[in-house]
Length: 371
Image (cartoon, rainbow, N blue to C red; front, side, top):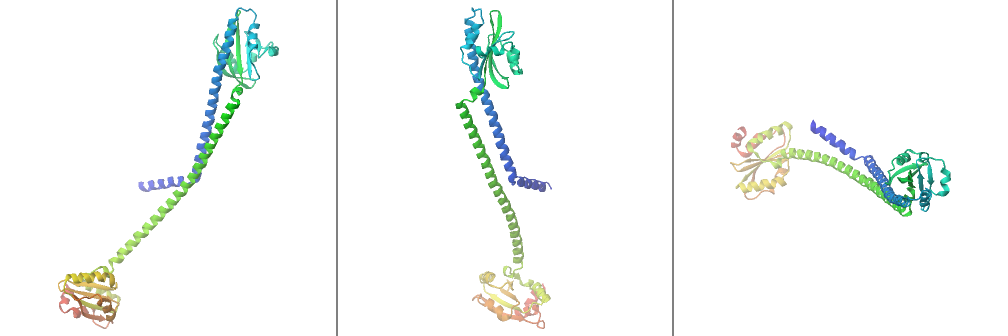
């Protein structure tokens, strides 16, 4: 019972793997997983690039802080704005300066008036920006990613004292200024195209190989079924041949006392005519040679019986008259093996087969048949 269940499970498993849909879904899942992993790694790579840029930006802010500290003797805060104003700025890069009360400087002197009356908390209105501003350290530059006006910025900032007041200076850079650089953008596009091509090739290859595999698997299954059918046919034929050979008169030499069994069957079925032939031999070698030739040459209707003591063979031809039976045998005879007598029974009114055998072989045969 357990073997049958195991075969059924194995058959079900093979049938599952023979389904092309399974392999197509598998290929798409793997390709989709690869695409998601590649996208995640590209995002991580961009974050790494932004982090590298932020560290460089921290150095820039530290340089400004050092310049401010060198001019600490000046009492007017305009020194700070002058230092910042001399630095490069663009639409993607902003400098901010604020004190404990309000924004002092944004980007450059021409835009400062736009933010008069703004507090730092008002300008840095998003949660990420406020957390960054609140977390600034004294005289130690830090950086973070913040959102201002719906745009992402790399922010580097520091808190420092100046003329008995605390100021906060920040440098904000849009990461698109870095990530949209032609060289980086071209490399990213090329990498994305390469990943897409690799995944497409993988997808096509897996589907094609799966198609071949499923086809070969089905062919193998058909061949196994055909082999099983042929094996059963061969086994059946072998059984039939074995049974046929078992009752083939050419393959057996019976003892003379077994002739009565054959005679009873022949009389029961009325298989006439029947011809009995007596052959005498001088040596066992001559008898063996004759029997070997008879296996190949004699008709299967001719049964062979042997009496070793008397060195003679009795051939019983079923459905053969005397002329036909003698013609089938005489060309196998030799000098040491001779045909000495023939009896043919061709009607029910004639003598019985046992009587014919007694007449053929002599009275001593009667004792042999009755044993």
